[in-house]
Length: 153
Image (cartoon, rainbow, N blue to C red; front, side):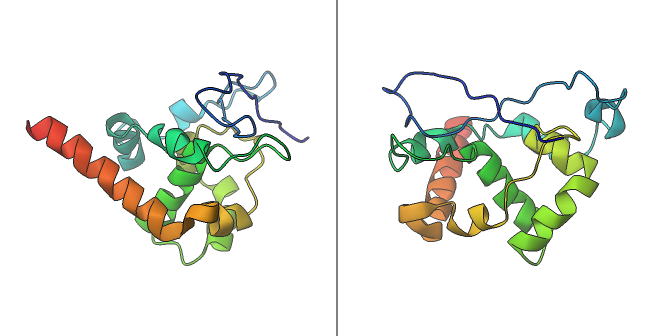
């Protein structure tokens, strides 16, 4: 069974027409598996999820997304996958995506269900697109610094 992403039309003025936005939703036939109940409440990824608003990635990715072609993987999911790559000390993008279906805590962190298909590993290698990895890393660091300044002030 192949799961498809729900795409929300939020208008062309605020994001690119072809930028995907993953909306996690409960499956009708998940055989009673609730990831929220299967992963302990005090898991570190749950704390990260509660403290960090990853949605800023959509604004940064809106400009490079075009108006034609295939719908992209949600930039929030890409950013969370990059976070998992470093936080969990996984050796490669390919290994991360290979292990993803086995890790309930990772699936829950991404907003995925057991039936959602993981993105291809190549989207992490080419995901930042024309901006490149250095620009994405710089944007994440700049956003983090701005959040910390806001909390300190």
